[in-house]
Image: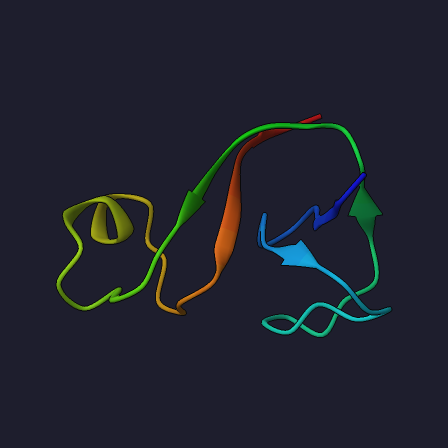
Length: 60
């Protein structure tokens, strides 16, 4: 199962979040969204996402 940064909600493959450089992860998440162009995406703007990545919609 993929792990997600608790702070950024970004999917992480290594031992460090590529956005916040943290290491607090969870494997309990629901839904995902892929942001390809955060500058032009209305969803990214509403979610205040500034980096292109794959994000979890909800974590617990």
